[in-house]
Length: 245
Length: 317
Image (cartoon, rainbow over all chains, first blue to last red; front, side, top):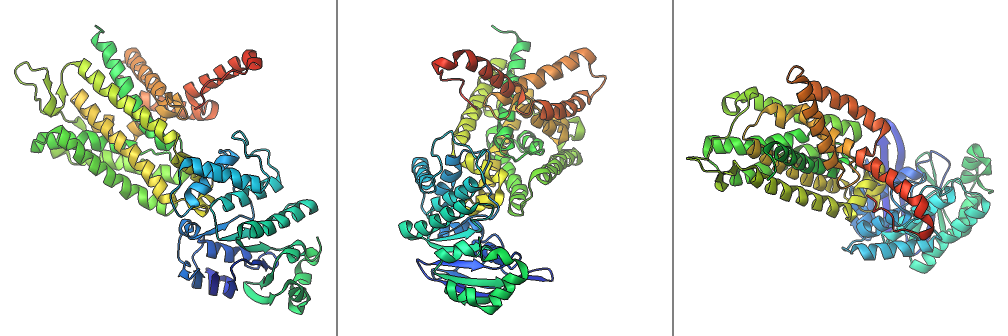
């Protein structure tokens, strides 16, 4: 479904992502992990069109999208969430999500349809659907859910979830992980999930790719990846708590 | 029958109300333009120059002016929006635009009359009071109805924009441009669209102003002074409520007329200076403007005693 080949991004003399290649099959949940600063979010930004690749290609359902601007990537069927939530605070929750439904869809839909899709998305993530519900007052978990609801409202085929667990407590992490799994199960949406905490992610993903210093150092089934000496070294070297949660 | 001076003031309030409303279409959505004087100047001068030098009817001249204003709006807007020039930087670019427009008018003094201004050749021959083809009417009542129609149309556009998804999109863009793009919003196009609507309406306001006053001057239809007046008027009145800019127009007009009566023409830049100072005070102490703050106070006062009966409340912005 998604094929990333030789993807490279340099900022001046610094190479954030170097020759990264991987594929995502339709219907799978792929974990993209690595310590902080390993280039995970940059890979996301390159796929989502927020950054332009220095070299390499990104193909989605057969079409090259590497140089497409963000709004076209969204129309192609790729939605993303942000590591640090970026809600539209002046708008209600419903309006936040309705905008995504209205502008993210490939075809033109009317306002009413956009709001009913928004309401569905909010229900899916257990956020209030009343018109009066505002962004202010949402905690870390609520904001993460809003990110998801907004992304899902664009009716994506592929969801790029960026650190959906950051800042959550253990029970919130579990329910967020279950939510991502249920999105795939109920909507058939393929998921690429970036996280630097490995524990919860390992339980849910089908396959894992490990990045370090902008390069792929391991990929495969979660259990195999977790035993990989290179991966253990990278994680023990930087963040010994990453395996547990 | 209402006297000429009050009628004149009413026409000016409606005309400036229309222009401030046009400005606030984008100003309230985070696109604060200090360049709308340019669009007004294009409207006023294009029509008068084409009429005086080439005999074009102001009707045709207005079409040319709108095309010209659209071209300028795209020329300035597209690069700004494409390369994400936002906030203060956008304000600076547009500030330059308004001054460039004024300087061009002054520099082309052989055609435009320079800083002395210009008067459209009169089409009211032999005691005629109306020349519709030349858009000249000596009867202020005619102008009242024309300006009223434009003002109402401006309010209608304001309301249509207010109720559209595009308004929500632009609000989202003003907060989180990248996130807005990530959900499929074509950011540059959304901004360019509202800029075009706002610029074209302001340009039409310039045409009306020139034909009503039958005199154009670079300082009264373009440049920083007039651009600042629009920003001030819209913000002082309240740019988040439909009638706010019109209240702002009444306020600025009373202020200007009051200063003129009190000081005559002794301090020519006094009103501009005062606008600048008061703009700062409004932004700090009354960011929702006179009408916005008044409605809020009214809501707060009526909400308390009637609360148990669950009133429908004031219609919100």
